[in-house]
Length: 401
Image (tube, rainbow, N blue to C red; front, side, top):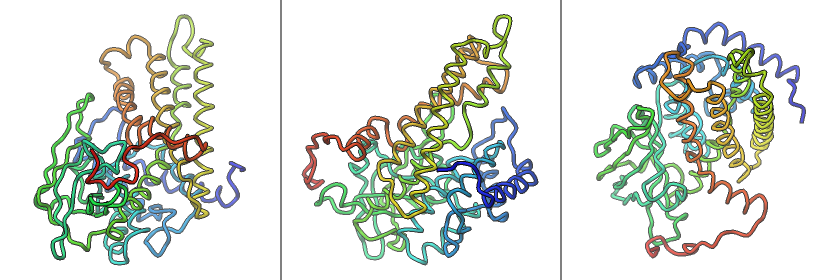
């Protein structure tokens, strides 16, 4: 694979650079500025609207669904250029673009595509993911939130947890159990739900960072129209796999986490020189950069597979697994370069930001698939190693202990 731009890709990059240079600065957030959640989402919607108006929203989405009908490489090129700016991007727009839109495009009907996709691409709708539960995290198919058919509606009862930005979301993608008499992967159904529906209660979870990005979400006799069901009854697991494929392939950073560290080490005094003069620091930075480049190129290969209609399967988990480890390692290295000052509260915005990012990096070892689960999947489905013993295999869900 040649990773250099083709003439067509170079032209697209130049077009993206020119548009971003003219548009992005007005939407940037200054380093060290902490916005209220509602303001963060408001600015995120505005940036997404600008992307839509500029023709850079839904780059790979087919034109019949409201996208640009572009290539995977064009999407990667734009993401690389966009990452040069400090823009309001996060789960409040990313979940809709990377999870809701793909599952609706693939498994939804024409009416659902017309209602949700364009509005999401324009930033008019924000989304949250309602998958994980107290007893269904790494083992998502163990979920217990249930839905019972009642005429043209479904009545939902249960609890979800770790619902990122649910408190600022218009809609949610929801998977529930509709048939407990079959094996756990088979009795699931997928819905989209208006987060203002009566019976939905959102409770913030206070994090070590002091923020509350995550929430608990409770459903008490919540009525969801059957028109909001995505796919057929019992096909929820297939919908979930579409969502998780996009989440894992999209988890690799488009912005280098190591190149700024090299500049940071060069600017950090250490003895009579700088931190970059230390051979151990240079070795650690070199190893981190090599790992980052390897991950980037592997992700490009898998995205190319998807563009050809191929399913990377468990290979997608390798992107997420490697990125989460690299991110935590790189931020730990940044803390070491910063030295003793990294251990206490700092007055400068850069160190405050480093503290926040370092704390947050531990989340990625769990979110979107825990390291241990992904290693099992890679071992069994990619390397062909013997699978673990599963006591619940082939048992109906209502017979599990």
